[in-house]
Length: 71
Image (cartoon, rainbow, N blue to C red):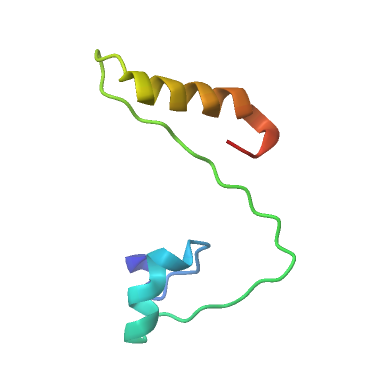
């Protein structure tokens, strides 16, 4: 966000991410209709530690959903 505030370009982000910037007047929202955006999600875990049972189930759901666009 610092690069956008500094005038180096634009970015597509969640409105939650920029709320504070918009409230301060540092950035403004531009609504884009009919945009087909896709978010890439990364899952990070601790190296050498197995996930908890709940985390393992969550990871299985994500893998199962795969490219369907739903989790």
